[in-house]
Structure formats: structure tokens, C-alpha cells
Length: 59
Image (cartoon, rainbow, N blue to C red; front, side, top):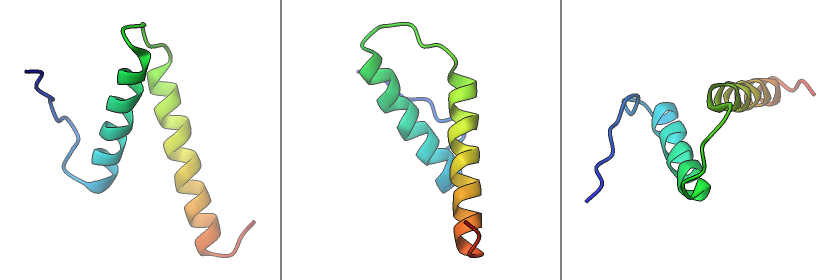
């Protein structure tokens, strides 16, 4: 049985990123991943900025 290691699962954002990465790796089906750090940072930053801009009515 495969065991998952939780590195940042101590908060909701960390758990969300981990779940997304688990799904990403599953879909790779053995292929080598590339640019993971940039992919994560880009998407987390985009989500953070979008939520803050939306909250304060900035478009």
C-alpha cells in the first residue's frame, strides 16, 4: 500500500496544494514532471491576487 507523506498539510491552503499535486502526479502516469515549483507559485499567486482583488472590488 502506498503511503502519502504530508509536508505542509497543517493548514487548508497546504492541504489544497498537496491534493492538487497528488492529482497532477497521478495524471502524469509515470511521466517526469517539469516546472513544478513555478507551476505551484504561479497558480497560488494568481488565486491569492484574484481573491484579494475581488474582495475589495478591484477588477
